[in-house]
Length: 448
Image (cartoon, rainbow, N blue to C red; front, side, top):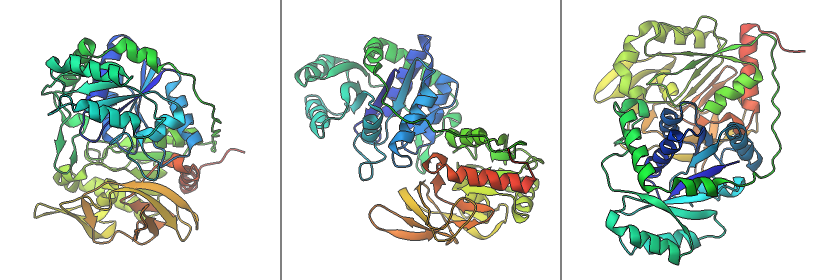
């Protein structure tokens, strides 16, 4: 099974740009691609999807055990000609050995191509390359792509690779075509008006200056053994799960949705921005994260949708509301000295801050039973937000790897709502409990 990780020396080195360039060039050759992102990120997979025309997936060794990581890569990549996996942060960056691109490479025995940002360097590139090759071994790094490399330094880059006994896979020249960002988070693919033209241009650069045949050759490697995860359908009559999906609510793990479908749920997407109400036959509700702060006026003006969500939550429909979805359940969102009314499920407000709040991986510990958790459960999760609530909830305890902890989330028999993002494959029982609650709410029959 062909597969390759395109990792980097750190955030901002050009991993996403190079990954998109390589994927576009391979697609132009008529190859069928599967794409993946190491770690919990939602945004980079959106760029991948613009290229391959189908869903991208996450591989996260903090969320999942080793067998599950291998299972997800195999299941979502086996029918493709090659799987391209984008790394996260710097190649070695993670939490106690988990969550890094290195850990995914080791677990899945995948060859790694390291992206090195060359801006402002010449011979010092050798020190960077040598450092990453030797910092920890084995590390699965098989070669280098040099990003933002002046053409006059190509011979220098080739010489460095030869001296350090690693493979030169080509370079990307300095150019103005980069993936944009904003002060409070990255720009999503749908927000870039000329995204197709930019990807086309990147593909042309890759075809010219990246050694694609060499990447394909090095990507061929036997797949490590794993145990398939057996998931059975649970219902005769599938419960309907209404899932928010539009530009305001776009942070959704495809594997969470597909797991619910495997269990036997039927997914119906709707738009809190433009639809009048939640689908009438909904037995459950998922309000995922995203950038609701960019569409506050429209969300506030869609009064019929706000009333629809509030009435369903109040009568006990099972609901998962993460980050942006959690914000939407508040009475108000305050931004730039303006106050916007939301669904008013919670008598509290959300306000903007100037820095990331509680960023990173956490473990959620439950002291009581609720929609997704049983007493004593410890579930891995992730937070990434600049916003804060006047009442974040006290149903769970979040614990960081460094020992810090705090209370968070609003949980009940019918609700999980909070800033932390959860991934169902970290504990499949969460998806099963949610699906059962949806079926019971809708009076649906189970399979015998």
